[in-house]
Amino acid sequence: MEYLGYFLAGLAIVVMGVDLYKAVRLRAELSRGELGKGEVGKQWTVLTVLLVFFFVGYLASPLVLFFHLDPRYMNILVFMVFLFGAAFVYVVVGIIRDILTFLDLLK
Image (tube, rainbow, N blue to C red; front, side, top):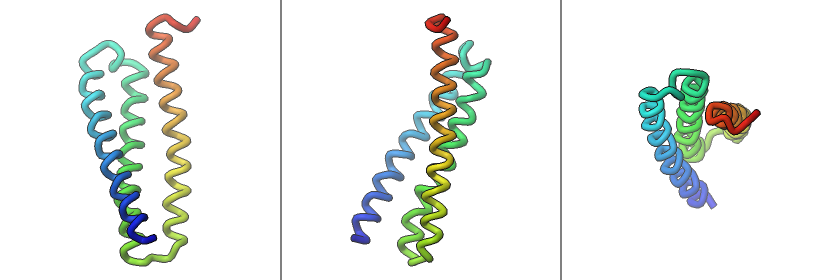
């Protein structure tokens, strides 16, 4: 069962690493355009910071398993990810709203 935990943590780290890489590249592209100068650019920066937080949390998860730390630490880590995941969704919805407004698809 422990190996499954390591496997899932490793897979999550790889996926989040790719996500973070794409977010940073997209942020660079956004900064060159009109969308990146306004509210969308600011929100994208917040989104990237949240991705960094997730990535660090994902990197920490196999360490909790490896060092056999108290399960309470894993619980705190999980609930922090839940909290910042909710903030992440809030920012993403805001970005989508701003983009749709910019494209004049919302009234």
